[in-house]
Image (tube, rainbow, N blue to C red; front, side):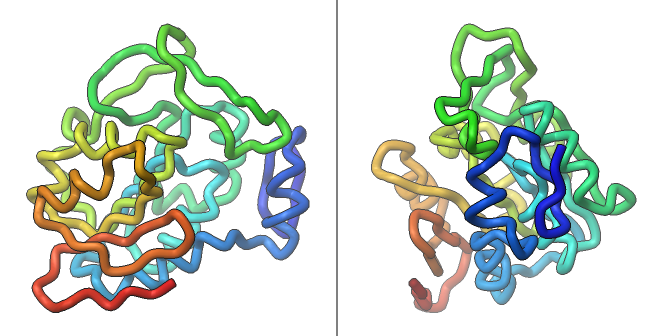
Length: 209
C-alpha cells in the first residue's frame, strides 16, 4: 500500500498515483458538487464501485452517511483507510441485477481502477441494491462499475424509483443507462466526459460540460 497525496493506493498502482492522486484528489469529485443542487435528501448516499474512496470521501462532505461497495480486496483495504468509517458502511462485494458468484479481471494491472466483472468466477459475491437496502432512501447514488452500470440500476429499480435519488453514472451506447433512466422518468441534468448526472425534476435541465 502506498500513500500519494494523502490517499492510500495499492502498491502496484501507477495510473492513479501518477495521473490523478498527486494532490490527493480525483477529477470526478467535481461531479458531486455539480449534482448537489438537485439533491433533496442529505442523510444518505451510495457509492457503487468505490475504488479507494475518492468519491466516498467527497460524499461525506455533504452527507451524514455513505454506503460504499468495492469488490477488489486491495482497493477495499485502501478504501477503509481513506475514509471516516464512523460515518460510512463498506462492503467488499459488488452490485448487479441478480445475486450470484462472480470473478474479477484487470486488463491493466497498473491501473487499480480497471477491475471489471467476469462471469463464471467464484472470487466474490454479487448482490442487488433492492435485496439488501431497498428500505433505505439515498439522496445520491454514484455508479462506476466498468460497464455493469445498467445491471446495477436494474437490480436497484425498486429503491431508485421509490427514493428518486440523484444519480451519477458512467453512460455509453452499450450499457443502456440513458434509455433505462428516461423510462423511469429521470432527466439528464449534467454531464462531464462520459459521466452523467440524472435527477427527477420538472424544470428544464441545465446541461454543463
